[in-house]
Image (cartoon, rainbow, N blue to C red; front, side):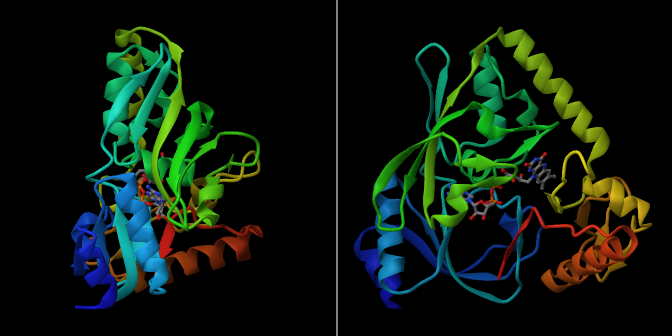
Length: 299
Ligand SMILES: Cc1cc2nc3c(=O)[nH]c(=O)nc-3n(C[C@H](O)[C@H](O)[C@H](O)COP(=O)(O)OP(=O)(O)OC[C@H]3O[C@@H](n4cnc5c(N)ncnc54)[C@H](O)[C@@H]3O)c2cc1C
């Protein structure tokens, strides 16, 4: 048993060695994580970080793995999954919700609708977790999650549990300070406005319908490149460059929405990376625009 595994076992933290992540990822691409750790509490997440750090083992938190392109073969990292131990959700005061990092956006929408709390219906249909959505500052229809975030709870790189208030500089478009913190987000406090269950439910339903019309159904990691408002949307420029349907191996630019790279069945990490490089090169040559990835490459 390697020393990280041995210490995790000693601390009673659930974990698996050489864990296949392909089937868990939305893209259905990826090899074996050196370690897959499933802490049951913020305390266990903090302990897992400390153990990995002490042994120089690179680590990262994962939620629903809907925004990742994971390399094939062995990945020399510990994946710290918040999908099991962080699924609490409750009302906080009249207008607040406290949600664990592992709560899915779908569960969050259902809870908000049931309690008649409005303000984040634009998030409906995003297939991630609260932790992933905080980290990515996910959003849609011109709005982002930070609009309703009051505070974020993390286990930091020293293994300390902290509360970070949402103030200037914490979030920007598809970015958060957590990208630089080597932390595990354990939960978030949200602030919403009063509405009625029926109104919130209808709005959520409407948004999900809109997304179904626009987005491809094949496995993907969502919007591949960032938009830059108001200058361009990545989908539009990729389409204008004639790249819809362009294929490398099992990866293709979606015919339905050009900012989605989809897995046609047996795409590899390299297929996706090569196709993304071709898209970027073509768009730069034809439009002078440098596209930047929204998805996270996990190497
Ligand atoms: C079909 C489809 C549609 C999508 N539509 C949208 C959309 O409309 N808008 C949008 O913004 N995104 C969209 N996405 C992308 C994705 O769903 C979001 O970015 C989502 O918020 C990611 O959450 P996740 O739990 O899947 O994160 P993961 O993919 O697991 O992780 C993404 C990043 O967040 C980090 N992370 C995850 N959880 C934690 C945590 N608890 N603590 C610290 N770091 C963490 C990971 O290390 C990784 O770097 C879409 C994806 C798909 C497949």
